[in-house]
Amino acid sequence: MMVSGERGGDARFDRTEAQEMEIKGLKDDDGQGDSMLSQLFKAIDLSALQYRSSKEIVGRAFEVYFTGEASIDDGGPYRESYDNVCGDIQKPDLLPLTLETENKLNLHGDSRECFILNHNSTKKHHEKMFKQLGWLLGYGIKNEFPMPLDFPPFFWKQIIGEIAQVRERDLADVDIYKSQMLQEIKRSAADLSEEEFDAMYEDYTFVTDVSKSQTVSLIPGGERIKLTKANHEEYIRLVL
Image 1 (cartoon, rainbow, N blue to C red):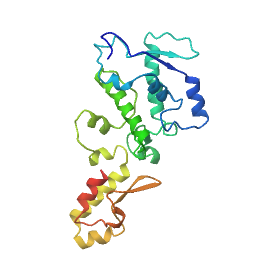
Image 2: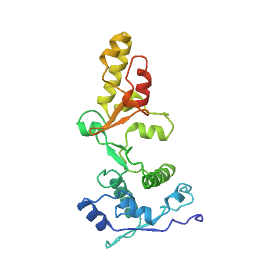
Image 3: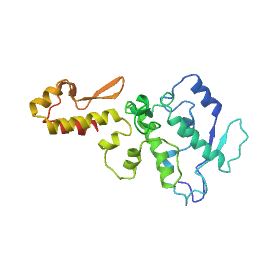
Image 4: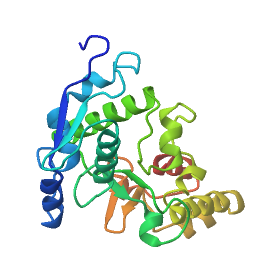
């Protein structure tokens, strides 16, 4: 534990190495590379930050130094390091933590500047990286230290407990086409007979697209379960 008034040590960043990694098209998949985020992970015990408040840490959680750059951390480098780290987080080709929204990929709908968490990153080291990201977010929120992360509104609503899960209107912020599809299914269920509905959606099963190139089952064996009027509400719930 840090005593009151102490910082968490020094964080030394080599921005040249981070830039070279990106220029070479290398991916920092395990948090052990030279991205700005990984350099922070290596330098600071982020898990300790979640227990620190601004009353325990004078000014900043750690001192920042940029290798090869003449900088004195009177606050500017500290703020700049967070900007650089958050910039890396939102580079899907560099780190495995985020993805561009479907609205951005389709150039249609709101929140095109936003990113969502990468549901494909399921390995053990990815879990560790997500935890570290959570500690970083927790520190920023607890100490009212804004972080330039472009996550959609429903992400922040879930963090503060305003909503428990994503709703249809929230889905439109990241994938308006899928949101419209779900609305159409609800309208069809209300207007059509069971036979008419089942005939209209005879090619639909319990799978969903999570990107233009990837389809996943909503439940085990979902590719063999047909969408029907009887189960359409469960289908919508699982998609959300």
